Structure formats: structure tokens, C-alpha cells
Image 1 (cartoon, one colour):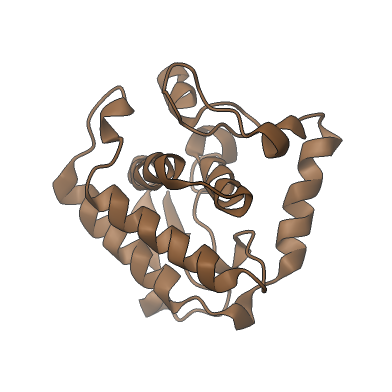
Image 2 (image 1 turned 180 degrees about the horizontal axis):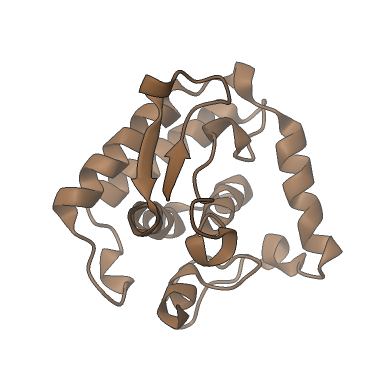
Length: 177
């Protein structure tokens, strides 16, 4: 099963980026690792936490792909949020925090995937932002008693500094299989 990444629902097929399950998890690991290292503001941390949830062990096989427009962007902060995600992608290409994974990422594979994803993020514009996506996503945390994740932004003790999501650490989930 392949996962499809695109800017928005009506993106032409030739502008979509497809990866298998393991590949999707690996390139997203690279972004989440770099993003956990770089995130300073509440919004930056929220964007990385959202990305941590895009994992085969959480979403299921073939369900990790997403529209960039589905990310929890804000209209007012869009330019800085987009710039942050692009910085995360560039930092991931330098292998920032890749050594925290149990097994290494293969640079020759992951870098082109990061570049493809970066091109999609670069195409994202504020006109595609739907703040209902953000509000819906934020509502999940209090509903399941995990609002502290968005208040305290806990990190994994084992994977020093890795932001955790509703389901814990992304890398710990992988290790458990």
C-alpha cells in the first residue's frame, strides 16, 4: 500500500508524492527528529506533534499520507509556520538527530523523499489553510484527557528531546512494532 502526499485535495496526480509505509515513516521520522530539535514556539511544537501522529503504527498501513492543507496551520501565522516546516526539512537533510533512531536512515533514499515533500510544502499557500483542521485536532487532547501534551510539550526520556504525541514517542512506537 502506498501513502500519497499532496498539497490539497484537488492537486493534480503529477504533483503528488507517493511512498510505501516504511518509507513514509522514515522520512517523517527525519522531519520529526529535526523539528523536535528546532521547535521553540508553541505553534512550532504543535506542528511537530501533529506530524508525530502520521505513523503507520497509529494510522494503519496506507493511511499515513496526507494533504499539506490538512496540517494545523493558522492563517495569521502561516508564513512563519511554513518557513519553520521548510527549516525542519532542510535540517533533516543534514541528518539532525538521526542518531537517536534505533537503526540508521539511508541518506540516499531519505534525502530525495525530504526534497519531494519540501516541494509540496513550498507550494502550500494561505488560501488553502482551513483553521477548522486546527480546531478539530486541538479538541482531541482534552477529550481524551491529554491536554497536558499541548500545555507542557513533554519529550521522550529515552529519545532525549523527541516531542511526544497522544500515543507517546514516535520512535518508541516503532521499537515496539
